[in-house]
Length: 333
Image (cartoon, rainbow, N blue to C red; front, side, top):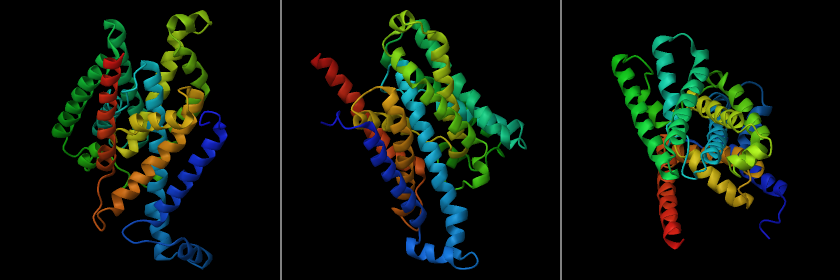
């Protein structure tokens, strides 16, 4: 019965959850602003203090959470599909770290070129994902070895980030918050042009979703159907890099969204077909990160927990559960 439900119904339900999370994200914080009071302030003349809080603080971070969550979730689903590994994710195989390194390098050597950061993050993410994929192809590595290779590359890239910030201490004054990840300091202007990269990346991912499904059948089968396997694989990884890089450029190194959300989306879709999974990833990813951000700013109010820490509390147990489940599946096979 679950599989017989139309996908559109599931998309609408998830969209409703996203809208509720947006409303909560606007209203919740160190001080609750009720929708009724906010509506009354909007209808009144002038900007009230509550309207300023919503307009300049809460709305930008809600938009940032939606964009980053959607981008990282879709990027994770693409990477898992291309590598054929359900444990792969942008943060685990070093994609986020590659984007972070190039972001730090751009800030260190071109401090005034703020608009170059999303592009720099993209090239860093692409270099990282192609490195992992290239090593996997050359060595004929197993799925678990791909993850371990990614972890090693991620550690190396993080060490490079620490090196740059040590040599250039003025780089990213908030480096600790950047490495943890969060959207608390985001404003509308800092989302440009990253949001353009994210919209373009998600659009490209949707257009490539059918090709991803064909690619999942295996290289020989995909090739026999007339697909240019190498070109499609590179296009998919480039789309994943665009998404991860753009998200990292304004939200920092938030982890595990690209691991958790694709699995949730496949469960809800009742299928592993990317034509069904990717749209759900975009919606659920935005809702997931928005809800995590709400928890980050309300659980210990008036103190605020970094968003990346809240996501890690959810993502790490989920990752360990996946490892245990895979081990049990191998034993039962």
